[in-house]
Amino acid sequence: MEHRKLSWDGFYNARDLGGLPRIGGGETKFGRFARSADLRFATDDGLEALGTSGFQTVLDLRNDFETRLKPRNENEAQANAHRVPPSPEAPLPDGVFGVRVPLDATGDIEFWKRLAAEGRLGSPRFFGPVIKEQPHRVVAVLRAIAASPGGVLFHCAIGRDRTGLLTFALLALAEVEPSAIAADYAVSARELGPFFQRLDFPDRAEAIAARLAEQGYTIESAVVEQLEEFDPWADLIDAGMTEAELIAIRSRLVD
Image 1 (spheres, rainbow, N blue to C red):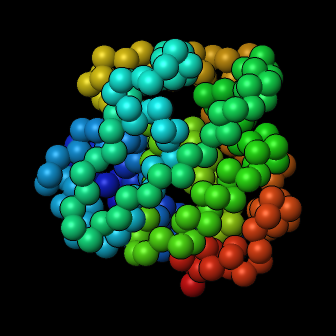
Image 2 (image 1 turned 120 degrees about the vertical axis):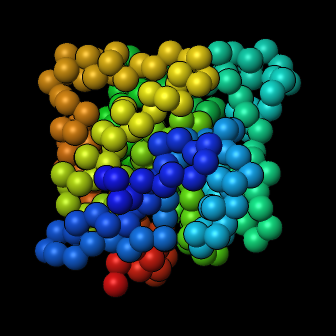
C-alpha cells in the first residue's frame, strides 16, 4: 500500500491504482488512475504536485448540492444532513481539468430506501445494485473517464463509497486479483480517520464493520461477494458501454 499512497499536501485517502497484482501475473500501471477524498483540504503545493505527477483530469463524482455551501432549498438541506459538510470544487492548477459527473441517481428514492433497509449503504454491498439498477449513471462516469486526458484522479466526498464503486469496476475490468481489490477498499477505513478528525465529523467505520458482521461479512469478504456477482464485460455492456470503450479504458491500466 505504501508505494501506492499519494502524499500530496492536504490530500486524504489518496492512492494510485497502479501496482496491483493481476490474475495470471503482472501489475496495473501507475499514473493512470488515482482515488481520493474530496480536495477541500488540498493546499497549493498539493495541487501543484497533482499536476506535475501527470494527472490532467480531476473527476468529481459528487452531486451538485454537495458543492454548494448554502443549500438552495429544504430538499438540498435534507440531502446534506447526514453527509460531510458541502465543499466547493477545488481551484485546480493550469493544465488540470475539472469534470463533475454525479454517480448517484438521487431521484430514485425507493431504490435508496431499499438499500438502506437491506443494510447495504456505506458498505461495498451497494456496488452491484447500483451497477445493475442505475446503469446510466455508471456509464456516464465511465465515458467521462474514457474521454479525459492524462492521468485521472477521481473522488466523491470521502472517497470511499462512490469512489470505491468506480475503483471496483476499473480494477475488475483490469482483472486485478479479487483479494487485492478487497484490500484496496478496506484501506479507506484506516486512511479516513484523520480526514474525519479534521472535519470534526463522525467516523462510522466501526458501525459499518459491525453491521456487515451481523450480515456475515467482513469489509473484504463483502467486496469479494460483489466481485463474484459481477462480470465486468457482460454487465457493463448490458449497462450500455461498447466493447471498444471498455477496451480503451482497460488499456490505460494494463499492457
